[in-house]
Image (tube, rainbow over all chains, first blue to last red):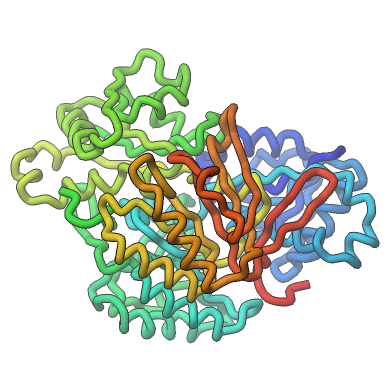
Length: 256
Length: 256
């Protein structure tokens, strides 16, 4: 049995890569990933066979990783953040759950899969700004490439109704610009205009940017494809210490 | 300026403790935590001054950590999982945001706070069972000690309406037994009885238990205080390979 690691590399800085992920990387001869994620690993990928497939080639990446492992090569399929959250892990299971794919690739049965979780962008941003996801939260991807917009819009209303802290993944791209503005407009019907909003880019990396704003002042132009956008709930508060600004969400009501 | 680390130790096994957390631990002379979390760190806590305060003494723990750091002692306030998710980090900011506390403790201004995120139980369980949180998900604490039950019930309905994958933290305790049964009953109005449900206990630890069940068959008696309960969305699927059972949530609709 050859192991296929579904390997998370965290937000970027390798100081966030736990021993279990380092060991999986050390044991993998073949690495399959979008190239940027491999570059972030620096010399941890030395002497490995790199298989870099571009954005948009996600299914091909998952299939290649399964085939390499099935052929007896120790392999890691790699995503940044947590590979289980809006990333590659699920595609491996979708392929295994597709009868035609599985019939064509009987050798896939011999693979042992090990999923290694990692720090996702929502946690990296939360840690930079304080404790905004200390109470009930949700994540919503604003990409309508694979999910119909009406499903996303239903979730936006549900998140508003439920007063969840929200992290928006895939907030926009070159081709998708209006979705975040629409999300902002919907949420303004449910929570105060002054609700804290945080934008994080390149989290834990050299060029990290953190922006503190509010729901009404959220400026779509400050957001890019690599940003995470977080919206507090109606209880989230911003404070300031000598060190910096912080945002936290109380763990309950009247706890102090 | 003395640093107060708000330090996450992940699900339990120290193989999940990244270098940044190991370094923070090495630099801290004083460790403040619930005792069990320190025990899980094993010899990483050798030669440190341990301050173990029991469950229920959360505010006292946060205040002690602030006071130790303000007195110039390098200090780590420690939670298992991610300290930013249903854990201690937010209490430090609540204390800093309480005028009376801050007026009584002017030395708190001299502290530098650094929050170090970690793998939360939702990610540990997800990694053990496949890729259940690959699409929009939410977390809900079922503890009504600090949050009124009507707020929790509103969130349960919102999570149902929005078809979010759900992770229940604090599903029950000795004194709270009916909340999870009520949550199950509410969700059965929104998603199929056959929806995959997973229970995880002692994740990544020696006595780890993973239970696969369905929403209609969820047996409250299989859940304890240290469990995480995860409920798939209407698209989540269970499959079986030669290795084991897996649950995944597709990243979108008709992606293959």
